[in-house]
Image (tube, rainbow, N blue to C red; front, side, top):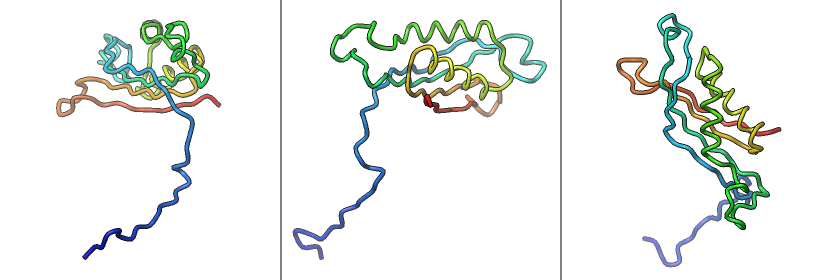
Length: 139
């Protein structure tokens, strides 16, 4: 039988210390055409892939004070950037494509961290999607 107030133990976990807020711009279920694959039948035509992204805003981002798109990472520009990248490059593996997208976002948009998921659609009869998810930070 529990009595009020019941005894409890305070959990002290160093990983729960306060960390700086992390604000992200996210893009979900972005479908684009990409030249991707190692097999002969994958090199005949581009395939539809689906991307999910979380692009961290720099800690000093002023967008929450100003409300100006110029003070954030514009998701429309990110989408066009990825579209252009996929039009000019070919990839053997989804891992390579995800790494290239992550590197490009970190470098070209000044994001401190990015999470990129890439899925190929319908490549196996029994599976809706196969893919990879990676997270990268600037050193």
